[in-house]
Each structure stands twice: as C-alpha cells, then as structure tokens.
Length: 238
Image (tube, rainbow, N blue to C red; front, side, top):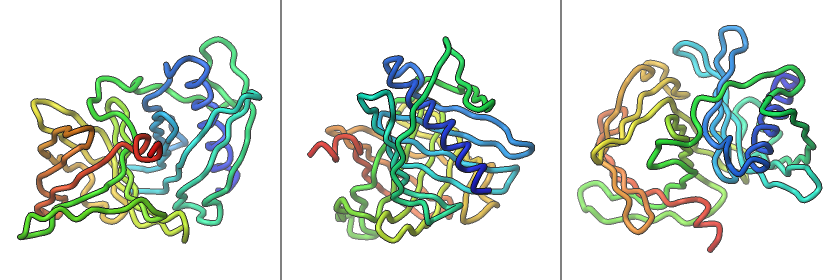
C-alpha cells in the first residue's frame, strides 16, 4: 500500500508541476482507476487533495500544499493522510518531465475531468466561522493546526477535517457539485464516517460576502447549519 501511495503522490505532484508550466491550464480535477478503486484528485492554486474510493466505500485520502521551485522541482508538504499518518508534515522535492500534453509518470495516466470551470467556488477554503444554534451569534475560528478545509474544482468538491500538529484525521466527504441561482448542491460519492450517505444530494444556499463564502442549509443528518468559509490563499497572505 505504501508503494502505491508513493506512486500516486509522485504522479499527482507531476500534475501540479504541469499546472505551473502551463499557466494553470491543468488546474481542476483528475481521475483514474486501479481495478475497482476510483482515484480522484482536485488541484487548486497551491493546494490539492487525492481520494481513493469504491462503490459506497471510502478507502483513503491525502493531500496538502505544493510550491513550485526555481530549479525545475516542486516542494510538496503533506498535511493529512488517512492511509499513513506517519507521513503528515513530510516535505518532498521532486523533479518532473513532460512531453507535449502527455500527463504520464511511470506509466500512470490521469484523465482530466475539468479545468477549474465553471465552478463559482473553485479554490481551497477554510472554515472560519459558524452561527451558534438558537442565538444566531457568529462564532469565529482562528487559523491553527486544526483545520476544516473544503477544496473545489469546477465540478468536484471535498471537505477534510484534520490536525497538522497531531496528524489526526477526523473525516472527509466529497463528490460533484453545482452552483445555480444562489443554490450550491453537493452530490455525495464518498463519506468516511457513514457510507449510507453516498448517493445523497444536499442543496444549500450560498453567497459570497466580501470574499467569504456564506453557506447555509441542512447537514447530511438534517441539522440546520450556517457556515462561513474563507479563501485559504487570502488567509495565508495576511
């Protein structure tokens, strides 16, 4: 399993490098199959996630941040890994090669699903606030090792709850999404905490207020929620 993870990571890092070389033309989502296991990846500006899952069964997820280097390499920092927590916070620098538009590394090929469009919410977001039940008061969350990140391409989404200090992975879910007339709808393809949620579609109201994503509706359990998500790139520039 660890060799398989290493191969997948190397392949995925290659894709992020191509993103740099071609002015973000490969930002978006990608997928490939290993037998009955589907592997999806979401790439945004500086962040990524990769997930393995089968029909109604979550297998594992890992991801983090990446940075292009001047020497033709990329620095990759793993922030979460439900398959091998010992790799969290590992930093790896890898070189890459490319021939034309071929996205192949060590014989492993990825198929592009989208290029970051048409998603109004494309990017990496961190939860920074939520309304308290009953009072309507906004409870804010400060930047720290404990994170709830939502990462979106043009058509795919994933949320991940994790802690970079303890390497604890708390949960994830994801699939495809649409945004239309102020309604953001998630179509769940994997859910680490409860496989019975797979196949559900969850509509939420959404709006962007001063660059923050306000997200309201009902959770997969039917509980009312009101969350505020902030652009991770913007937060880390502060």
